[in-house]
Each structure stands twice: as C-alpha cells, then as structure tokens.
Amino acid sequence: MLKSQTVGILGGMGPAAGADFVRLFVEACARLMRERGELVRDQAFPEHWLAQVPVPDRSGALESSALGAHQPLEPMLQALGRLAALGSRAVAIACNTAHAWHATLQERFPQIEVLHVAREVSAQVAAEGVRDTALMATEGTYRVGLYERAMADAGLACHLPLAEERKLLMRGIYEGVKAGDLRLAEDCFSRVALQLAHRHGPVAIVMGCTEIPLGLQNSAAVAGLRLVDPARVLASALAVRAYDGASQRRHA
Amino acid sequence: MLKSQTVGILGGMGPAAGADFVRLFVEACARLMRERGELVRDQAFPEHWLAQVPVPDRSGALESSALGAHQPLEPMLQALGRLAALGSRAVAIACNTAHAWHATLQERFPQIEVLHVAREVSAQVAAEGVRDTALMATEGTYRVGLYERAMADAGLACHLPLAEERKLLMRGIYEGVKAGDLRLAEDCFSRVALQLAHRHGPVAIVMGCTEIPLGLQNSAAVAGLRLVDPARVLASALAVRAYDGASQRRHA
Image (cartoon, rainbow over all chains, first blue to last red; front, side, top):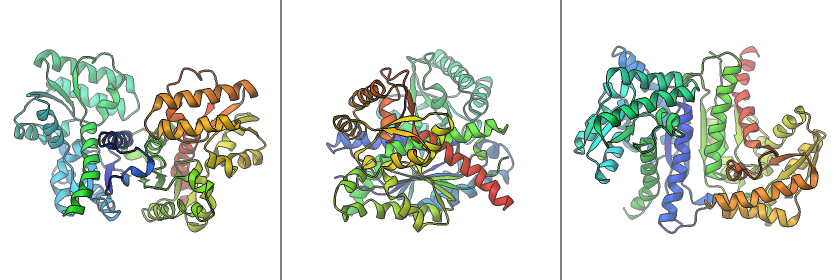
C-alpha cells in the first residue's frame, strides 16, 4: 500500500466550496492510486482534516483599510495552527482570495507546506502548452494580482475582464452561489466567460474563485470553452503531497 | 445572525461518503437558515470539522472474533477525541456500520452528543407517517441489528433483503463505490431496491450504508421508489444541533 502523510484543508470560504474541495481531493487520491496500480480502498486514503471556520469576507477586507485587511488573517491562522497540530504536513486553502494572506500563513507555520493555488494552476496550464489565459475572480483576487503575478512568472499572458464584467462576477458569487441562487450564478458567470472567449479567442479561462465552478458545473452555455478549475488543480496537488511527501520523508 | 456551536463529522468510512456528508450538512444549514428567515452567508455557517481517518473495515471486524471487533474502535475514539478537543459539541458519524460502536463512543465522550443515525432515521420516517420500511445495508449493519432495533422502538416494521440480495449489496459497496466502479454499484443496488419494492409494496427503502446513495444518485431504474437517505437525515439533524444546541446553552 502507498505510504501517505496527513494533510489539511482550510475551508469555510465558502462552506459549499470547502465541501466540494474534499470531494475533489478524494477523487484525486483515487485517481493517483489507480495510476500507480494500487487498490482503491478506504484505508489507502491519506488521513485528512477539513476545517470550516467562519472567516470575515476576504474581498471586503482587501478593499477596506489596512486594519480591515487583518480581519480574515486571525481565524485563518488559528485554524491553520490547529490543522498543523492535528499532524498536517501540507495544507490547501479552499478559497482563491484568501491566498492574499498566503505569505503570512506560510511564514507563521514553516513546518508545513501551504500550497499556493495560483502557482499550482500556472504550472499546470503552462505544462499543457497554453500561453494565453483569462481570469474570472473576485475583486479581492484582482486587487492583489494573485494570478497575474503567478502567470507572469510562468511566462503566461493573463487577460482580465472589464469593470462591468467584474461586477457581474461578484454578483454571481455573492447573490448567486453564496446565497444559494445557482440560476443567477450561472447566468452571471456564463455571460462573462463567453465575452472573454469572444474577445481573446481560445484562451484557458481560469475560474479563479471556488464559487464559480459551483455555478457553472451544469452549464450548457459554456460547453466548448476551455475552463480551468483551480480547485481541481489544487486538490490534485494536495493528493500528490499526501502520497509523495510521505515517501520523500521516508527516504530523507 | 443565528448563534451556532461547533460540530464535528467523523468520516473516512469511506472518504467519498465523508466528503458528501459535508455537502449535505452545508445544504442542511443553508436550508435551516432560509426557513428561519436568516441571510445565507459564509459567516453564518457553524464552525465544523471533518476528520477523515483510516479505520479498519467495519463489516469485516464485526464478522471476525471479539478481538477483531475492537480494531475500528481505536482510530474512531482517537478521531472523536480530537473532534471534541477542537470544540465540537455534537458529532455525526458518516458511516452506518460504524454505529455498531456508538454506545462505546458516546460513553467515552459524555461531554459531546454522538448522534445515532438509525434513531434519527426512524424518528424522521415515523414522523412522515410511514409504517413499513425495508433496509439496504452492509452485513455488519444487519449483524448488529442497528436499524431493526431503532425501527422497532419507533413502532416501524423493517423488512430485510434475502441472502443473495445482501451479497449483491456488499458487491455494489466494495467492488462498486469503494473501488470507483459506479456502474456496477448502480446495477447491484437498483436490482435489490426493485426486488424489495416488488415484495413489500410501497415501503420506505432505507439506503443504510453511506455508499449506496452515491451509487444510486443518478439512477433512473429506481425512479418512483421511496428511498430514504440516512446521510441526509443525519446531516439535517447535525445542522439542528449546531444551531439549536447553541441557543439552548445560552438559555440554560
């Protein structure tokens, strides 16, 4: 049986996305086991913990004063500390905007690896030979240039939506997915995705907020577009850390 | 905003069912908020933790010697202790068969409420006016009479599948869902469900293993049958504990 180490998932931002991230992680583990010729059974999965804690709104904090920007950090630090105490060697954050605090979170817990969603996505997209991307995200994620920087580091172009399209995205996220109105969410997200594809051609469209795939998952309107789900990429990366991290430690 | 208290989910049995349980819990919380006229937003969800730990096979342990039957208990006790230490006031176990150890788990952690899936399901089904049920479950769950006892206490009849039908269920659970072959799972589960309905008429068919709904969720073959998903009932019960437990403590 493959050795594995404990990993953690920092969720609650929002809770539906956190739950979906666990599903993606479990699927990624099963896929990895199959690729390596291992029998998929309950006991072969890595121990993993999901923390779904209330965290003040990330985009809101990034728009407010420097003081406000500290608000989401404290509950995230506390939950991360608890995931570390539970034995997690690597942790994924199931929220793109929350990565604005990634550097601080990683710095405070040097004994664990805090995965970085935009770096994982950039590496994955670049490895697939894509050169042009477009980013659907929250205002907070645009404000801190989370994906733009990671994409640039990987040699990728990153096209951004127009101001009114960004407003549509925020509406789909907050009044749509977070409030449970999936029809509104699909309408907002699919309009922006189609406009991005119309303007920039066959780009890889990154759904850079965990709520966006939840609103687009059954959408026929965006069939044919190349949509990248960062949660899926991050979940796979966490599965690799859970299995390969253990063997690296054994061989160290 | 509704007050809430921290709750826990003991999963890993199997991990896909544990992930799905969190989804059901989040949905139940959102539904409860809406029913009570509360705004559904990230910060209004109760803090909750999911432990997905490797636990030896429950049915296997129940079939083996008295010594073997202790195997699943230790990791469950350890995970439950950690969920308690994280502040959980109520914990749901995302595995029906694991409830064979419910009494011991509850006894060791009297400070938290360990929900009992079969009692929650019996109460729910009885409240809906149903009198006849049929049970699809693992051999371990039949062996300990988990549902039969709870159903009898609630004044309900509980019909059981024949020996060859039970074998089909175990095949669908282990070679189907747990091994990732959902087509096989659906075939096994739907055949048994249809036979139970044919023999016993319009009974409520309890999908008394968390893997069964995962295999039947997109099945057209069982459309029209009255299927009860204990995970959904248990997730709703946990949501009620998360909100109402907090207000009871406040008023105490």
